[in-house]
Image (cartoon, rainbow, N blue to C red; front, side, top):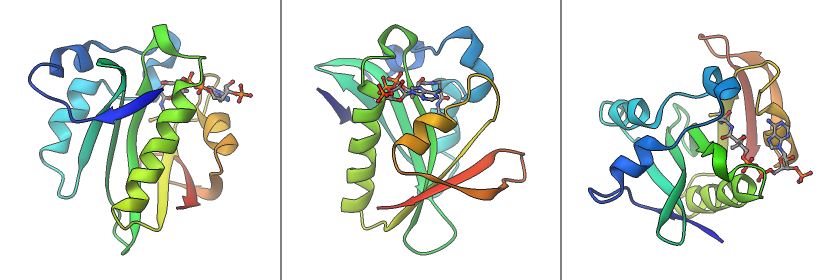
Length: 144
Ligand SMILES: CC(C)(COP(=O)(O)OP(=O)(O)OC[C@H]1O[C@@H](n2cnc3c(N)ncnc32)[C@H](O)[C@@H]1OP(=O)(O)O)[C@@H](O)C(=O)NCCC(=O)NCCS
């Protein structure tokens, strides 16, 4: 069973070494870039997705510009660990965490295309908002 854990000086290299499949690389930033960006974004937070002590994925979120709204900013499972239900379990943990932090809704955005995670999010209760971010990503949301 996966758990969300703080990234520490012991795990940061392993978290930054996690990779998606080559055909998924245009759909999510590297974890190193995400962690760097988080330090310049008010209200941003991130966690390693761990199987026991081993980091197998990464999740990052930030406050939206509406009270109660969280933005799921980055989310990935390492290519060696995909297709085993860890993504769904990790997303459930993230949503539970956001709820306990007091958020009432979450938005995310996806790049559309053959390897898009759109279907993954729709299966987890997200709905399409029918509009794009300024960077051209397709917006999704769900209540918490
Ligand atoms: C999207 C991602 C997190 C899914 O992780 P995963 O561990 O492979 O997902 P799971 O094994 O938990 O899959 C859960 C369900 O979603 C489905 N699913 C997984 N990826 C999917 C996709 N891209 N499109 C449609 N359905 C998908 C699975 O088939 C499974 O369906 P089932 O319940 O019928 O068996 C992973 O593929 C990933 O890291 N992708 C690259 C990064 C990315 O795009 N992140 C999101 C944008 S920030």
